[in-house]
Amino acid sequence: MLCRPQSAGNIGGAARVLKNLGFADLRLVAPELKRRGEAAAMAVHAQDVLASATRWPNLKSAVADCSLTVGTTCRPGAYRAAANELRMFAPELTTLAAAGRVAIIFGSEDHGLTNEELKLCQRLITIPTASEYRSLNLAQAVAIVAYEAAMTLDAGTLSRQAVERAPAGDVDAMLERMSDALVAIGFLPESNPDHIMFTLRAIFGRSGLSPRELAVLNGIARQMRWAAEGGHATIRAKRAVGRKLR
Image (cartoon, rainbow, N blue to C red):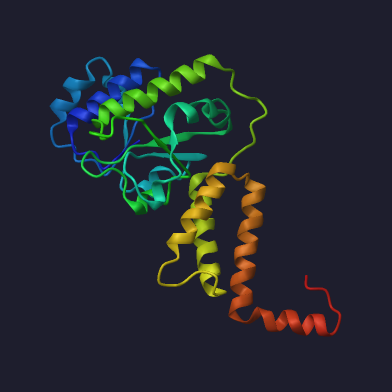
């Protein structure tokens, strides 16, 4: 998944390497595709992958049907510190791919993924490169990640015991409800809830959420919001007379 790609050549190059390694689902988020001929020239015999690439207005809509979202980064920062090295993370793909569609997300050529886009990434990976020059060309980065993924998937049998994961769009909606609820009860500061929410996103991203677990967390968020908006008085009144809370 290419997020805000600026070079038509990189889009075509990414399509080519995906076909080289047996992948076909290319998603383009708000692409600056002005030189279609350049994209086609770089794709060479992967015109089918390029032609079938879907366009999305934003990352949130592009990953809504995915069960796991994996962002790529080479930049330092508090929100990127939990990034795993690609080769260390790749073996997990055998199980994760069996549980549903996995989106591997690449940011724009100039600045990569923004902090807002990182909020939609449940896991982060990085490609170790020389400290003198960390940044890779976009199509090259896609090639390296696709190669590692292909080798891992070829080496192992997809687990039939993989637990179903809730779609990323549903998980993100729950996290928004949870953020609102935690602000309402005073656990998160209204001015900057993202600092702690990034930690919660990382926890749920590592563990994965089944539809049942997601439903429980949605229920908790709704109950916290209800209690913060006056429901606590109802709870006290019921307890005072020995009535059940539910």
